[in-house]
Length: 445
Image (tube, rainbow, N blue to C red; front, side, top):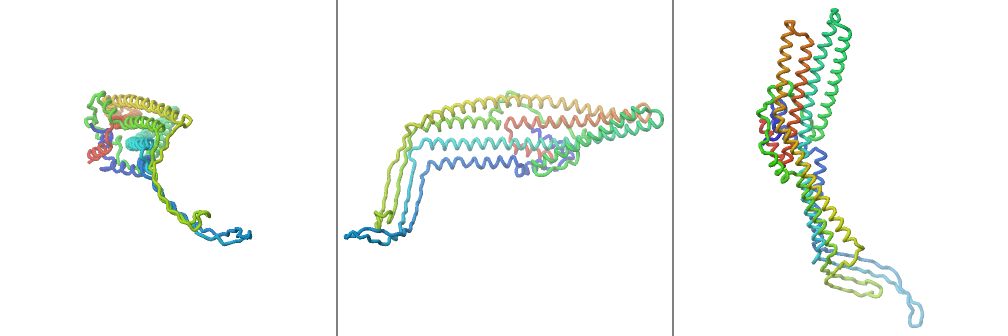
């Protein structure tokens, strides 16, 4: 099944962008899009949760070194009861090596498992951000393409309105027209100029949006309205061959948003286990080695070497109900996560159903709109030939030009909507972006 973005390249490949351009735009977006760069940094930060949590299960070793220089004096009575003062200058070096190794730490183990799940959850979220980047890029790309067609359509409307205004003025000068006809034609011309300015503004905005995502705005060398008949081939439209029920099952298994929600449920379950571990004791192996000299006045001119090893048991007895409350809170968060998973599954099913209908019924709509374009071309050709024989007026030609331009723009807009619907349908069922990009470039070459 071809991606909707694949067909975009078929359309633009008749004179649009160069080979591999969308692939290059996507690769540039991976580096330049600010939203995606923020998501990448967030994922890189989340990946450190696991090693940070695992450090709590490893031995903790610390070395303490100190060296003090004491300067002073000491006064004490001699045997005759007379005070005698003597200098008191000495150094007091102390070295201490301490080791604490956890033997049983259920809370630390649960925190590590929770951290591992958090990394997987962050990875799932990053996958959704990648899919979102492709969607935003394709939307901006198509919007830029559609904006080019809107400018061209508005330009045709200006030309047609100018011709009608000139014709109304000539008729008035010849005494065949009226002032209301001239005023109406001039008003239509003014409105056409306004629509052209608005279309140009929209093109500038679309160009800016595409540039913000990919880092540069890609120029289109040809728009669909210039050669609508050669651009669209209805036989090349991407089709959906699988039934809706099968796609819903596939989406439930592969949709990145559903996958992220499942990880959120797992996180909530592990949070319950972590909080429950607050009731469990902790057992550590504690060892130390220290060396000191002149540690105090009572041990002046004495050195001490100490070695110790033992077990330390911390048994929680009462914490004011904190553990029980934290478990209740975690259970509520688990219920919330499970409900959000069901809501996400339902939303994906609804969105997929809507996109499925858009894609399955889209070719019929596009075929009808293409026939409308062909009919408008025939009408315009007939009006032009009729104007040479006097059967039609210049107004008929102008109206035919407007009708053709509008029909071509409507067709281009419908193609854009169809392609986005098809691409988003594939995104809902978990299609790989790399595969879509490869097929797009293959169709252009």
